[in-house]
Image (tube, rainbow, N blue to C red; front, side):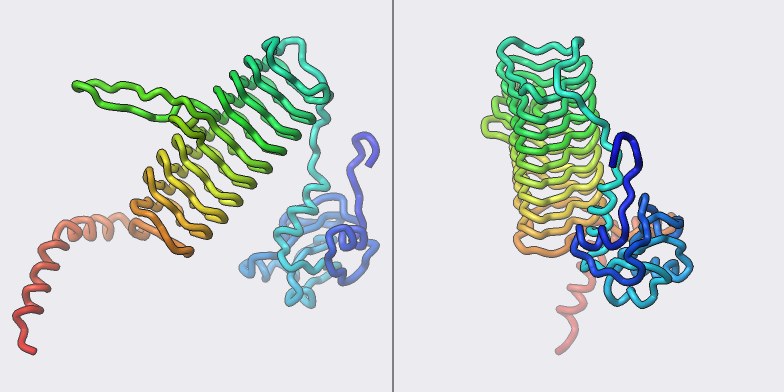
Length: 344
């Protein structure tokens, strides 16, 4: 790839690069990626969900990434992968246009004299970097970001735009933070005294492990005394709320609008669906899936899939069931009484 020219790869090159099995013409050229339904000549698509299998025969994609049992049905060149979606993700990265970021500090940025910024880091316009903070090699600090006091960014971090690190935030290597996220704001620590709230000082920080990704407008509060911790390769979607002193295990992913209240401990390889909530001081075991809109009200000790709430129905049915819900206790009492009175 030279200058701004679009990259071109043959199917054989992609097969070798990503250890995939080639079926068909290895010389066919790939210039981009698309969905199975919309891909045309020169584009690569994938089939991972059996629901889309009927689209395969009619696809005009130059190359399709799929599983071995679908290879015979491919109309043209195919690349066989154990997990087609993962293979497609890795191939797609070859066609992602990442703007070049020249090393240096933009003239409009304000950097405290006690801060240390690596010579090959990129600091964009209107960035503020506070006292004693450190920005490591290869970091990219996008426009309008605010890095407060005593923050540390290890090598290869990217704060895309308008990201705020309030205080005592430590990012591991290659952490990516999307626009508008706030890390290190004060946790929601309150004590009631004589009818009025008293703020509990939030003296801890936030520690984020290597290869984490923090979504747009997501908030991670700093700890009260100890730190709020995300272990390596945690992925948070947009608009996620992480309360103070929460700990999230490695490789866990939380979808948009989900939330974990203070001091919750979430295990490794967990999946938390959109708008799900986890109450404070609870523990979630490794490899737990919490489905969307669920509310976790007690600790989960065993791996598995957990849900709460009622399935979606038409409103008329829901209103009838909601009215009957109030009668469940009385009904249960009558059933128990009749069971006890019935002869054996």
